[in-house]
Length: 415
Image 1 (tube, rainbow, N blue to C red):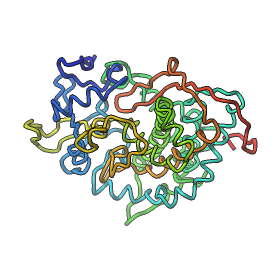
Image 2 (image 1 turned 90 degrees about the vertical axis):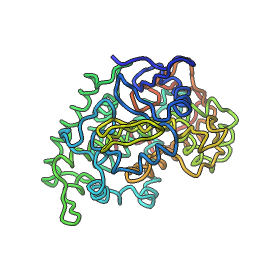
Image 3 (image 1 turned 60 degrees about the horizontal axis):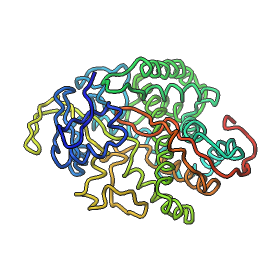
Image 4 (image 1 turned 30 degrees about the horizontal axis):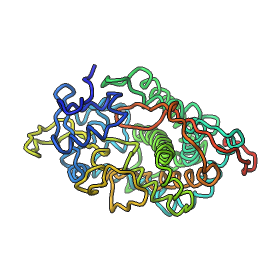
């Protein structure tokens, strides 16, 4: 078992696995920035960097801070140790650069813009299913199935297979209170994903199906083709990241706007504010709170001597609230803020490959929600937080609203 979270104005203890920490991590984050910008947890044996400039530089300097030892603390391993399959997110340049080029064309802003109409149709299907009832459970009814349909369409995953993949993807992220290891339920979810794609990939190689997976199977770049382990890693990464990011982000938008009615009214009246609202949510309460890196050599920062091989957490959530970057209003939610930069999608070589797609999904979902159910109210007494070490959001977010009419063609989301 891991230790608890911080007690007010007492010993500073940061444990990303503590459920109490998840309720309001920003109190701890501020103390970390002010009191221990290079924080060492002796029990879990990791460093944490919390100031904006330090975290941004940590993302940029891949020679110093490697992704090859895993990007999550609970699955860390020595650099070079085989994880069973190879995910692009756990490569460093130059190998990472080559792999990223293989798929980056699918996720450019221009390519994603062409998908907007289809993304809106998909979301309309799910909103139509609940709009006549005047109530919804946002996560299960809207924000979880919708991005799974989008990324599955990109990959070429059949509609009938998507519910099981979504269920396994959700399981992968589950963690237990205070426990810094992967629980059996999460391992079961990962086994389900691996098993599915290990069975699916030979079919793709035989010419079955369409979509990005088929493209990757046959793609060659500078004489380089993907290994079976890399193909498997791509499939799992796309399913988890392509689903979880938008699921948590859109629910976070709805929850935050419900607590800031003036800002909700403003963005409802002016849909042009939606993109800025998405960016502020990514800054203020991003779904990804940290990324794990492994030091490749000894290093000193803020008077602390780190050793090669040490684990370092880059605290995105803390950095995005840093007064040194955002001024005295850094801790305030403000959709009119226009920050020059934030770290919601990381930075540098590992800047989120699917950022344009996530932003488009968020834009479409929020536009449709505010257009069709603008008076929604969150049941704050019944909402249930999602607990994971580095992902934050809602497991359940019940809302009520004035019933409306369906607008779609009546087709299901599986068509």
